Length: 158
Image 1: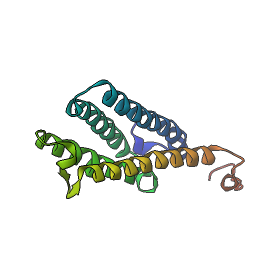
Image 2: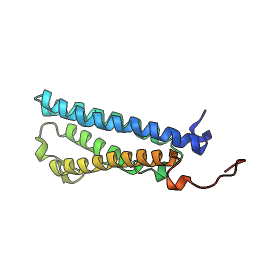
Image 3: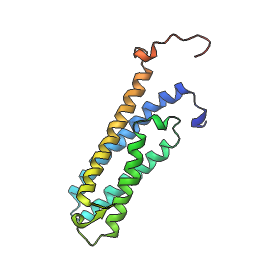
Image 4: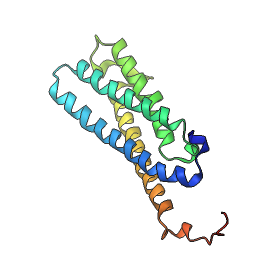
């Protein structure tokens, strides 16, 4: 069954599960990045491992998000797109093209690498907050006590 054939009610029920998966991947990304930078002495190797996870998980989430019928109203869609295409991919590619230079000397999309990394932290935080907001919104829409769900429904249809 295609996602496009889901009814709106089925989509909302699955939106909460999707948001939990995305949130789990994002929390693991934070743990993974902290772990690899504390384990490996080589910042380049640690950056490769953390960057590959950020790109891999971001690409998987983006691929899944392309199938959402309501992706344009999702609060995690825009930070996810920015995180993958404006932050993660340029950072990893630029870092490896300049592997012989220290991280502080590299410029990524015209910004110094530490400034760009701070921007990436803000965008990733926006992604986590957007995912939490989507999760909250999906939970509220499924809750019969939520004020927006108290509309009287006809028993023969919407």
